[in-house]
Image (cartoon, rainbow, N blue to C red):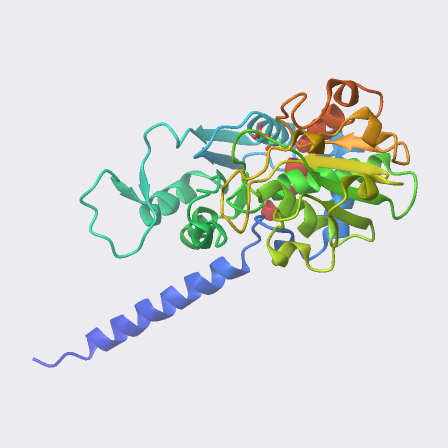
Length: 338
Ligand code: CP
């Protein structure tokens, strides 16, 4: 028998689906600088949180932060937990790297090792938490997938609460907001010269920190320079308009901040093609700068990336820089939950 109810029901579900897609796209996430409409406002809030933490003591009382770690963390985990505690939040953490094998592909026959799809997992966790933080590093084997920030984007799509990146495949926004707070705290002039310098490392590292640093610093009025060996160019999406200087010493001249970081090759994706020790940051190179502050996101390999004399020196600010992770996380939580 012909029924008029089926098309009505179909239209209802279609409308519901579009509403959920629209709602999800309108939600305030924190996975890139481009998620934030008012970047100076966010920086101002973070600096105010640093100055007046007591003012925010109950700002997010009763809210629950869920954190999923597909990769390990010291700073991001502890600082984000501390930030949530500072604002009276509850915290649930899941070490997703310990045998929690999630399927991310759509339309697959799940007859392998993966027992749960991100669609259910994200939807279920959204019922327990008001915000989800996700850490998932680059594969360093599949550039196309990595540069979609695949895992973070899947959570954005399937969660019904805001998503905060705790470092994705290509971006680390909490680190970059931290770096901005740190530079603003230490700068002696309105537009300091900030140099991002590649440095050698024995293992293949992702490009998330340098990409993200350039993304965020590119939105400031700082004089931004990136220096690396030829062949270590980052994705143009992040270096567009940024001065690239292949002579590290020349790049360091007159710099106010040196930010050292290793990254693996972008063109020959994920490979370590250069371990040239002469790119390590040492006192002789720092002497070329305008008494620059030395920064690194940590963890850092001593006497590979940077010489002890610099890391332990008076101009190293890596410890207060890591301390600023708390204010960045507080600002991000307040942003997505307010
Ligand atoms: N800088 C940073 O993200 O440190 P962790 O890997 O320890 O979180």
